[in-house]
Image (tube, rainbow, N blue to C red):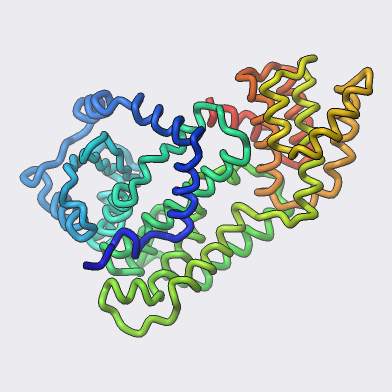
Length: 403
């Protein structure tokens, strides 16, 4: 029997997932979050404010879920289905422990999707259960505030790849790339055929525009996302639908792409959201991160042990030792750190918006290492954000996300 789970899953979803769960700190935080999550409370809220679906109440939706469950090999799961009132098209999958799963659908989504599109959405949500993505509750882990920036960014990177896997599960269930793509159109702009005549090449040009604008636009509010941009997801669906693996699973003919080639091309567009620095840029960033981290750490007049440890993790042992030697020799470490930072970041100002956001996010993690960010540290972070051509409000955005 074909292992649907491993056949469909995006390769780097699985590899990063395994790396994260092998990390003792992340595994502890994940397990703690899962233990704290109250399934009874969540169900009580749904039972009080939403409509629980049975085969008798909504036979069509019930049959969509049952068919997707069986096709994905999830017949052992106990699935509850709820509809809630909202014009916004949305759906979710929640794991309650054991074999209990809850699917929720907004009224707006059900009213906007046709038969095949709904199959895609249901398959996507059950894909999260299939791949056991619940084992890494991303937002809950980040809320704990105990991760260094590198692990936090890896977690966000994994979350985006998990969505690619879930999209593939949805495509497998609906077996219609056209329906999968049109569902994204409806989620993006609320419209589809006949108002919109979809052209993949035209739509994919948005990815290139996103890449180009990342080097010039200072509004970076979109850069911190746990989901890939919709044009990237559309391209990923199209590529996978042409792969030999998808054609083997669905019994279709004439594949034009190996799954490895499809994955490689998907990785290349994901880099628009998470560019990888070369060695030279990394060395410059390490220097700038040290001085920026030192600036924010000394802003309140005291370098806490937790801040020092996080600073070492961010900048690396060599840069940390060199920088601390200079700071220990000066009577004004705050002023030295500010001056050195402004000098060190000059080569980094041409980086794309995603890189600049990631840089500022790492400095926020340093500031928050002692579980406290006071006004002086906020002022320092805001000044550094302006220097890096990042909206100062981005600092607050990250803090609210982590709190």
